[in-house]
Length: 326
Ligand SMILES: *Cc1c(COP(=O)(O)O)cnc(C)c1O
Image (cartoon, rainbow, N blue to C red; front, side, top):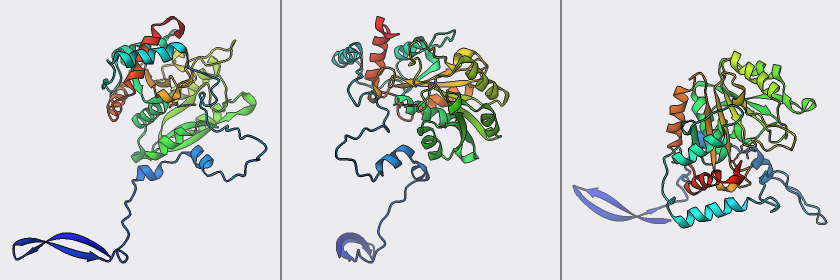
C-alpha cells in the first residue's frame, strides 16, 4: 500500500485527502521509448558488450575492437597541441558559446588546412562539429529522409556508425562490396547496382577503417563517375586524410573536380591523436551549386547542439598558425 495526498472537490470546496493506493494491483508505470531510440543500435558495442568469454588467465587480453590511438599511451598528441589548450584555458576568452557552425577564425583555419591539391575552401564552406561522428550524423540527416523510404549506400566491410546513424532516423542502408583481392577497392558494378530511385547519398571512406586501404585518384574517379551519372551526392569520410605510409599519397575526392557535390567529413581525432577532444568538421565541396539547400540545412542542424567544443576550436586556430602543423 502507498499513501498519497490528493486534492478532491466536494460541493465546490477543494480539500486535501489522504488515499491509499494498492500499488501491487496497478499496471507498472513504464515510459515508452521513441522510435528513434528503439531503432538506434551500435553494432560493435552490441557484440563487444555482450561477449561471454573466459579469458586465458596466462595471457593478457588484447582489445582489437576499439580504434582509439590514445589507449596504449604510445601515440601521444604533440607538445604544441597540449600547450595550445593550456594557453586558451588560462587566457579565458573561450569559455562561452561560439556560433553553432563554429568560430570564424577556426572555420577559416580548417578551410586553409584542407585547401591543397587544387582545392580551395573558404570559412563559409566549413561547419565545425562535435567529432567526425557528429559530422556524419548531420550530413546523413541533411541528405536522407527516413519518412520517405530513402536509402544511403555504405561500404562493406565498413565503419559501423553509418548504419547506426541512418537507421535511427529511419533511413535504410544498402551495402556495396569492397574487394579484398583488389586492396579493398569498391566493386564498382555492385555499387552501381545498389543505386535506386530512393538512393540519396553514397558514403565513401578513404583511407578506410577497417580495411586500411588508400584509394588511387583513378579509382576515386571511377566512383565519382558512377555518382555523377546517377546524380547521387557523396559523403566522403576522410577522417584519415593524409594519414598514409611514407611514399603513398592521399587524394581527397574533392580534388578530382568531378562536378559531384560532396560533403567532406573529417576531424582532429585520428591524425592529431586526440579523439576525446571531439572536434570534427563538414566541408562543403560543391562546384555546381547543387547543395544550396543542403548548406542551409547543415546550418539548421548544427543549431541543435550549438556546435563543438570552443576551447578546442580556438586551440586548432592557434596550432594551424604554427610551423609544425601541416
Ligand atoms: C573514428 C572514426 C570516425 C569518428 O571520428 P570521431 O571524430 O571520433 O567522431 C568516423 N569515421 C571513421 C572511419 C573512423 O574511424
